[in-house]
Image (cartoon, rainbow, N blue to C red):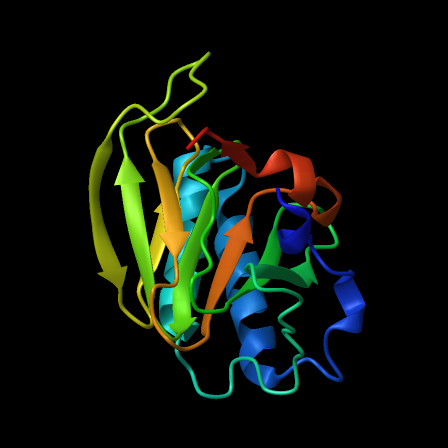
Length: 190
C-alpha cells in the first residue's frame, strides 16, 4: 500500500463512538457470531448485510474523525474487533484518488457512505499473476450500496473518485487490525 494510504491508530479517531456506528459494529458482531465456523463467502455476506442496513445514515459517523492525510485516499481504523475477527475502516477519497488494481487475501465487505466512487472490475487473478488479466467494466457505486468479496480470487477491482468532491466509504475486512497493512490487498500491476 502507498504510504499515503497507511492506516491510522485505532482509538485516536473519535471523541466518542456514535450510537449509529456502535449499532453497525454490534450487527456485524452478531451476524458473524451466528455463523460459527462458516466459510469466507458467508462471512463477507454477513458483513455486507450489516453495512446495507447502516450505510448512508446521516449520524453514522457523527463525532468520528476521518481525516484526509494527503492527496491520495486515506484509511482510518474505526473499529478493531477484540477477538480479531474483523476490522472496520473508513476510507476518505479526495477528487482524483484511486486504489491500485487489487484482489483480496481476506474476505471483505464495503460500501459507499457519501460522495461518488467508480468501481472498475477485472478478470479474476490466478496464482502467479502479477498484472490484471483484463478490464471487465466500470460502474458508479450508489450511496448506501454495499458489495462483498469472499477473497477467492474471483473479484479484482479498483476504486476511484472521479468527482469534484470528497467521498467516504466503509470497509469491513476479515483480519485483525494488526494485519491490515499486509493481510488485505493483493496489489496487481497497472
